[in-house]
Image (cartoon, rainbow, N blue to C red; front, top):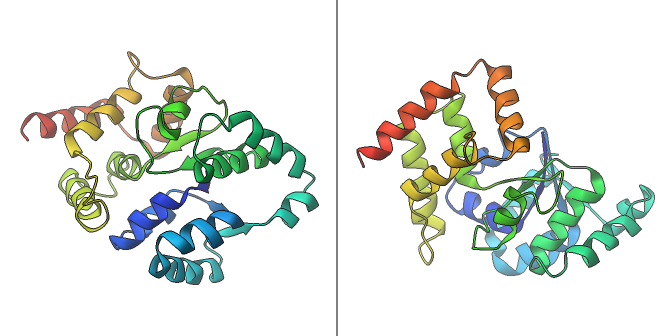
Length: 220
């Protein structure tokens, strides 16, 4: 799957030395030029410089206004900006509009505030763009047995400690919300189909993984 990047998830994962989490689940990553050269550069210049090196290596594609024009989607991009302006802050707005205009399936962002972009997209107020925060990327790696549940917890806390001290996240609460998102009782049809396809492709026993997570959370 491909992803359109918000700057917050880039900052959090680079500052906590967990940048590989950003690259492992996605085939292609895209970022709008304004987000790179204005938002990321101004918010964290050290991360900006590190991120540029990965861009130079071809890990991320920067989309410019010229690219949008050449692909015939500049007007579509601007229409989405106008359409969603009331829902998001500027950075999130551009990243979501880019995803919609380019047909990118995923929006990667750690902005999970109430009524923010993550919640909006989980509820499918905007169709065809699936949101993932860093802890949901950890959850996917746990499902695929690429990390243990203890490693998932350790990696979560490392991101918290190194890049979220002012507004730390709670592991138990975030994992509970993630588990609910992908269960029949609470999940949307889109998310349930997505997780079923993800597990089928990787031969994952979702029920057993959910039981393991539940047991771990109950003992915290």
